[in-house]
Image (tube, rainbow, N blue to C red; front, side, top):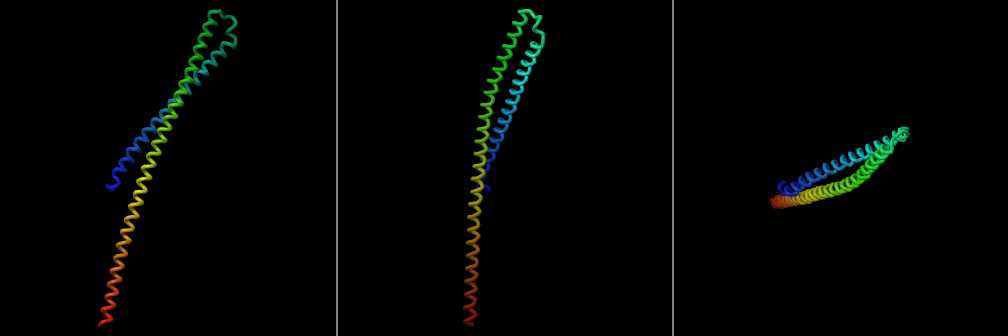
Length: 155
């Protein structure tokens, strides 16, 4: 109906915005999962490296080599700490994407509800018009029937 075209266009646009927000949300989730995977790899590598050093290699090593190992492990722990910060930021971004998605969903649901209520209101008006026409038709029929009775009685 042309009467609701503007509202239907608004619903179309809101649907596109909601879909875009859903894509952003999904991308934020994938990015966060990837970051967790990187953190897990860093932690596993750190644990494996420590296990190899503790496993018996540290007996005949020079001081310089042990110093390099500790420096490497310190850098690895810094990388793990930095990855925790990255994950924290990505979790905030995911939360923001989730809020944006919810807002888009609410907007779309609201517009659909407005369209539905306007359709219902239009249906009520149409039913009242039809009822009025039916009532008028019945009244005219009744009046004709009464006039015919009067005519038959006078003849």
